[in-house]
Length: 410
Ligand code: AMP
Image (tube, rainbow, N blue to C red; front, top):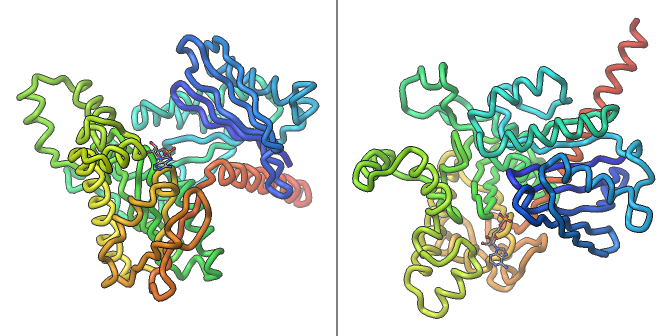
């Protein structure tokens, strides 16, 4: 079975074509700057051979058409025709409360996704466009939606409710949803596999630290809390997002600096976090370099980021009555040696001891805790595309099974 995974962002499209037998990535790539003048389509084959095409790509429809064309190209393609694609798996950011698992897309699902646009105005519209274009270009191929929020739907009311009027939840959908669910699911299941323990017996803290960052507490296979909330703005400080903040600051600073709702939303999402503190960069490579050369604000930004992550680890340990495994993943989690070290410093009273020798690695799956550490610490590169492909395969297999059962029972 071949699954095409599509991840549509506001001006980008990430794609992978995966052969599920052996879970081999046949081709993958990225289209950047869609609708922004000259766009770039990057294409990489299993052999490592890479291509980059620069041209004007007006919208997601054209981008997906180009991806399908290159996948079938006589010289560089990996399939003869589109019929070889058995299912398309779409990343969808917000599934709201309606979707606690992946779904086969139909008109009803599309309608529900449209209703969720107000919950994720930056992400869901692009995801929906991807689905509509895929349905138009490959009308006979099923589409499956895999939601970033779904893995977190196991949270209980005391975890997902905010202490605001209950009507905000009932009438306006205000609650913690959580994001990066596919990533937390992938790395936490992988960790259980690596330590050869039953997933449903473990207390896991998964730290997805990328430009967007979130922490999840997974107790006996279920998410019991996560740091991102109603939107991806809550939680730890991030590249450009503020993370947790006293809500009282918002009306105060809006008055003081004469800001509109749009201004404050944009500042908290795009000009805050480690970029806001350092005024240098949202990239941890730049910050680490600057801190090394004595820039105090870069050092402060790194300290604040690490401190926030440490606080979440401590609070989740309290909620789960201890920790068995901590996982670092995504751009910073997989690569920033100094950040991992800082976050887990002086936590031996929790049974957490890092091995500085083992921690000296980037982008590889490995245990980095010391031999005597009671809590196992792992770096696990995330693979959201593979989770989406596995989910798409599962949904299609279940659908086929159901059709056969119905025929046999009729
Ligand atoms: P992501 O959102 O998961 O793609 O992560 C992107 C972020 O990872 C970048 O903004 C950097 O801050 C960080 N990152 C990537 N590579 C490195 C590296 N080698 N060292 C430190 N941070 C890195």
